[in-house]
Image (cartoon, rainbow, N blue to C red; front, top):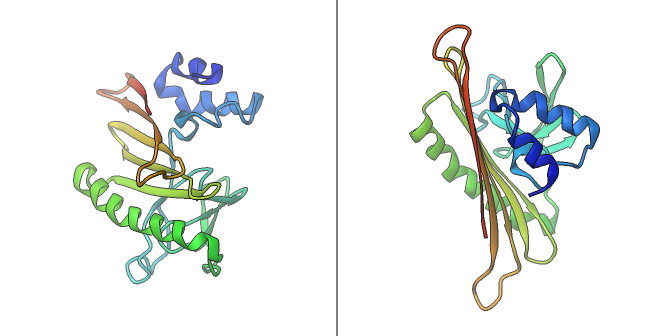
Length: 203
């Protein structure tokens, strides 16, 4: 486990977002290999009035779907949205044609989201938001993020992420690595906060 992750794990989980930003300000790539780089998630909830018609849904914001500073790609429609410092959003572009070598990974991402969204809604309710983002690697390798957040304005938050890396398949099988992290924070009554975190690696 890298030093930055160890430092972050020893801090108060309720302050995860603030501490993560402080570490990244000192060393932007310090948490590049850690699932804790994503937590807590930011969620783009305002995706327009034609949400149902266009099959658009609220989605998570992270480095895997960040096109440039303040601009993010929806995993459901591939439309681009901007998010300013005040949290206001605006759609800025329709989907661009997918490059030929990206079609398979985008189709796999779409299929993963079709499964992930009902799972999040079933187990975490309407307050839950979840997304899957996949990236093509060398050859047939790929990596991805399976993330979700449930936020209750009065009681706290639950953030969970699974960071997966899949190796080149050989003889019909392949090796994969899965790093998972959960950060939970609850406020049982005014003025008090209870928080906890868990990080697990599977190879």
